[in-house]
Image (cartoon, rainbow, N blue to C red; front, side):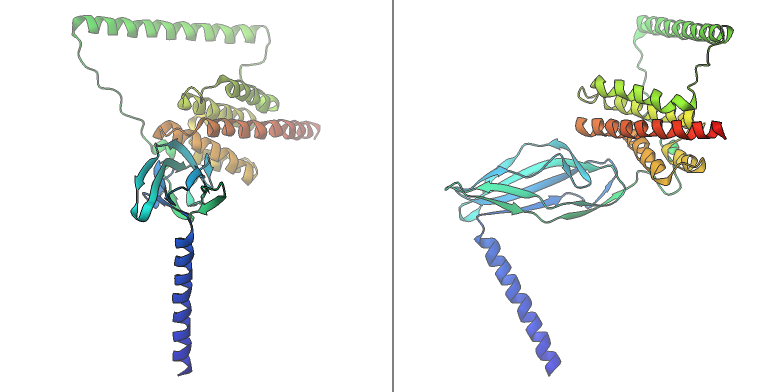
Length: 327
């Protein structure tokens, strides 16, 4: 009897709580809720985020509350807002965004606070609930980025005899340019060896400094702002791979990010450092292979992070290499 009474009391408490919550929600002049069109996405894959707001007439939305980054997610595009009339004099607003995540794992879209204002100038915030999302890798188990195939080449369409002649002349011209560049490079190498200069490869002691110079130029190039994201990330990844090759002797330009992570740990790099460089290289590969550009802000932040890392590495490498020479 007592157990049954406890069950009835618990059920009553739940009903009362739900009633109070509903009454409180109904009393609010503005309510908001967020939703995604998918709960599982692939890393770098755009997903639609919709923030739906219901406001009583006379109450206006001052700020939909969506910033450039939402937890682990980044806003790629802001779509036009929509407004419709709802029942009982309510106004319905829909704010839509394309967002994505660049880290594998369980991601969360945090609560979004929609700022509103009443007829008397009073302001308030209508929060949404957080949304859990599973972010999956583009690779299947056991695959690496080396298994990804680039886009298929464009189909060559026939254009008559004139087209074929022009195409042949273009190919011949490209071949001449390539041969000329090779000859110049060989002459430079021979000349440097004759006069006793250092080889073209960068010394381990200056590996970080050289990559810092490369990334400093990239940071000022404005490629992301002009939409040249693939070139931006190609140069970013190239600078990191140059450092790994010159400083640690890794075949960095022939290895995927996943393979390089194992190689970095194999030559004694700290796990956190290897993980950091792996994340940068992986993001670079995702942008280039999946053609999913981030925002210019994100692209420049990545370059800034890489510069900070390499500047610290330049100092630590100098001490480490000097200590090795003394021994």
